[in-house]
Image (cartoon, rainbow, N blue to C red):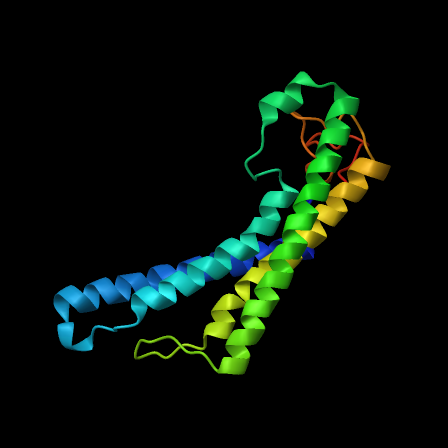
Length: 186
């Protein structure tokens, strides 16, 4: 059984598409600049930055789900399962505060840009509120993931699967041999 949820697939697909589009725009820009200068697009670098920022903000939610963000695993490994549980719960609370702050600040910036009708200074004149909206969107995705993570550490903690060095419960895959123990999903 595949542990991917619909939400996970959407995030990974969107981030992959944004990265692929950024790469295509980059290739078109380089080819245009060196081989067809009259057709080179002046706004390619700007669009690449916008696409990559949106992709990073979307995929950051996946990093929360898979413990991919930078953290002091060495310190966690020194603690026992119960200590790890409470350190992880504290980490989730701190991360939630940060993500909510990022959402609020990002919303303020996005709203201001919308109200001012701010556009980029290039020929493309990209509406900047779309670019700035990546911040509250990524913050929202990470807030939900950290909320789920905090809930699991507080109410569904399993030291056999949720301590450092083990695979998270929701990432386990069913054994190939058809064992009765099946994988769980979000």
